[in-house]
Length: 230
Image (cartoon, rainbow, N blue to C red; front, side, top):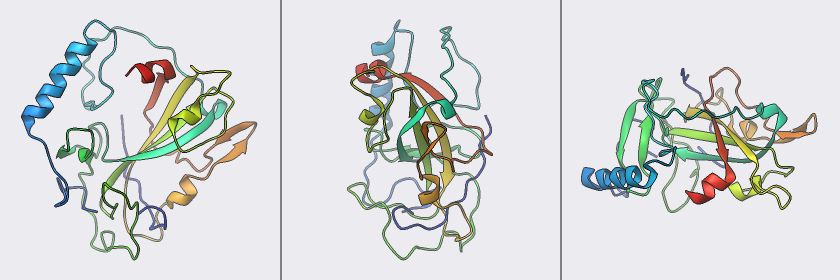
């Protein structure tokens, strides 16, 4: 799988550490023993179930022992986009995103993989306004994010949570996630997230028409019932 560096403009609703930082001062990081216990519990809980943890995966390795086959989801152009969300750090190791961000808080935050490359000082310059204010801190130039464009076969409109992907008529639709791994930079000529997250109706389906097409996306095909069990 090839991942290319994506470039972002500064924007008002999103734009704090660089991709090579491990944990900011206001974050806590659990020890390796906590991660080891989590992995042991996951291995025990999924033993013989035919599936395993979703992340992290090492995309630089094609080795695997799961012989299960899954049908492809429909093309995302034939599904409704139901949710767009992002995570700090790439979920999986691969391409230009192999720098470990550390163990995180043991609950999935502050971990993942960051961008391996170098960024110019101008690209890392602070922005004028806080971006992504919340209990987990802010986003800043230099950070890696993974954006999930979630699509569903249910006849729904988009919303703020994954519950928007379900409907009363179809509670277990096929889901497909088009994934983009991106680097936040301070550059007015870069991609603008407001434009990337624009949603409109195209040929009868809700779509994100500005979703970049010049990268290879990892499409995850999930069952809503499967997600609820997890």
